[in-house]
Every structure is written in C-alpha cells, then in structure tokens.
Amino acid sequence: MSKRSLERSTSGSPIYRYGPRTKPFEVAIDNPDMERIQQHIEKHIGEVAMVYHELISDLVHIDIFWIKPTPNRNFHTLITGGMSARPMKAPPQAKEFQYAELLVCLPPEWSLDEEAFKDERYYWPIRQLKMLARFPHEYDTWLWYGQYTENCVN
Image (cartoon, rainbow, N blue to C red; front, top):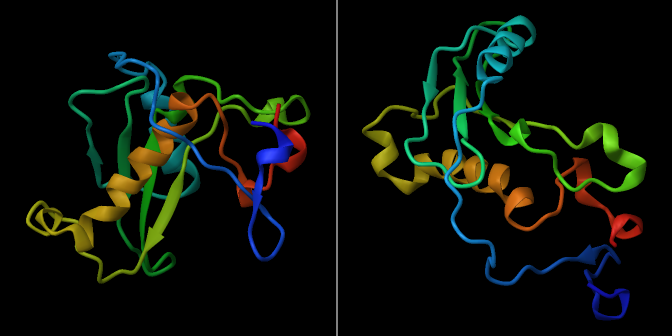
C-alpha cells in the first residue's frame, strides 16, 4: 500500500482497507503450545472454566479460553489460543511483539452457553476474536495496541 493512497480519518489516523483474501485455505494443525497457553492464563488470570474448540481450522487453530467471573474479577474473560502459533508480520522495531493472543472482558450477565450462542447478540465476541486472531495471518500484517502503524507500513 502506498502512502499516497492512504485514507485518513477525521482525526488524522490512517485507515487501512483490505480486499478479499487471496490466500487459499490451509488446514491448520493443533498448536502444541496450547497447554502452555492455558497454564499461563491460569497463573495470571484465573481458572479456565471451558475451552471452545475449533473443529476445522484455517491457517491457525484458534480456541477460545473462558474464565468465569469471580468476586475479584467480576467479568467473563475470553482469550484466544492459537494466534501465536505463527508470527505476525510485525515491523522491525516491534519484532518482540510478533507472537500474541487476544483477550476480551464481558459483563458478568453475558450469556456464554450453547443456547445463547444461537443468538448473534451473544455469539459475536467469539466470532470476532476468531476473525481477529486469524486476520494477521490471512493478510500478512499484525495487530497491536491502538493499531497505529503508519510508520510501520512497508
């Protein structure tokens, strides 16, 4: 993407637009680090109540770890597992951040059962986490805090 074609928001931030995916479907194998990811989550965040396993995976196998609300952390926590199976295309000054996972917190009243997932109003955070976790591998890019990467575009 040339800087000339770069759109800007009203605040001046760059807007990146991606066209249809050009990579073919590539079956992903299970991530051997998934157990280590779960151990890290349980050490730093809390006990994993459930793992939403992906059955057929493209590029990276994405599971979602669910940590239930507790009195000290009164919200649901959902964390991806698998995005870090491949490096993201981080800019040279951020190579140490090329492996990452994603996390979202939801209100304690959010429904996370199988019945609720039939309704997009409750399922969308799971779908969005999976889409975002696969995105950098589909488009050879990276995701980062604030995603302001104007000086990092090749």
